[in-house]
View 1 (spheres, helix red, strand yellow):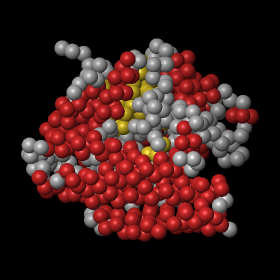
View 2 (tube, helix red, strand yellow):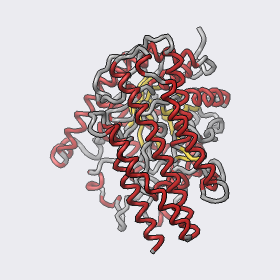
View 3 (spheres, helix red, strand yellow):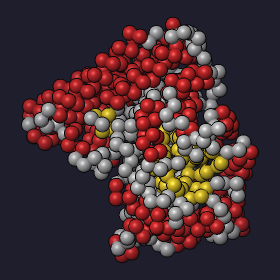
View 4 (spheres, helix red, strand yellow):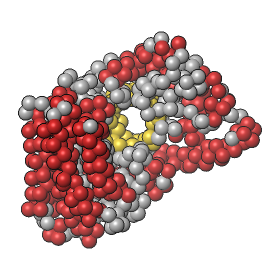
Length: 557
């Protein structure tokens, strides 16, 4: 029997679905059906939810001084133990994924010196390495069936980190970034290795220097450590170049992380295939020695949504199949998806749906085209010349975010030098940016010419969803078209201080009320899932107009 191209193939649950037994059972069933090897629970503080640790909070102290947390940790301990038993009984590995340093708030009451005079918690206090080692040791003792822990140490999203450090103490001012990461990784690796468990270190970071420091630190600690590398640097942006860390991790094993739901490509509300992108990257990364894949199915910030209640479960199916054979014909994945059945994101994820298998003979060609063409539309809608131009698939609600997200928070510059210049309103850049959005508008309008929901032999719920897609797609694209025109003209006016440029920017604001009304007519008061309203909130359009108007008034002041 042919060995899979990637030996470790893991399904990642990132949101609150991990605390829903129905969803966990569904994930186990999927993992078994598609020959995945394990399941990941990705929750920043999952260890702290189940571990006190006893060294700092012995039973009587925990019960008498911190009664609420004492009860919460017991509850999480029993739930985790139960689902770990179910997952491992199914022949699957179980991992937790965390961001460190995390701690229970009560730790600051027990050790107040950790908070310094300016109010910041100091990340270089030696206490943290003892604390981290202790809680990891207790965690693997409490849950011996855990296969390992995946950690992000370079993100700004943990409670204490060097990447977002505001402590001004002398030790922090003189701290060596590489040494700090080595200490953190060592504190986790020691108890895990002693228990025969794996440590997987993510390169997830906001800048190239922290990304590379993470790889170097892991390599310095032990060659037993595995690196988890996002498919693109920083985050799951399909337009970004390959992650340069892949193939540059020395002798460390490498796992590649993918998002299958769509944080940056429609969040499952707009259907979209990223399987073609996934296949190319998996082929290239396999040649660079990668041996594992992680397939994220949801996102921590949103409730009641995942690939399991969207057409984007196709990406999960394709990812599972590509993990076994990177050179497979993707048509096989499209066929498997349609056999698996279609479900609608208009419903809550926790509402069981009867998967719909389309009956029309042309269904395969139509649904494959929908998924592939939809990425072509979203690429020109949610990105500007390859730069991120959305807030987690949402349209913008203020001017500041447009260029901040493109050129600062989600900048390409660390990995594509000078890229941000391509979205500045100079030369022919504005014409190129605007033309890109016009092309997206035309493609979205063209959907009606060939996507005929009533002719596909689908259930009433799926027909309803397809009609929703047709109704919402055009206005969704038009909103981003309007927003790039407004943003570029305001940026130009800021740079030129020209009354003519301010006037041109102001003229773009006339269409927002109409766009907001059109969007509201499609999504508001329909009883759709919360995630539809998250992605398609018409009030964001009204706030954007108001904010841009204020900005222009200040410029003209």
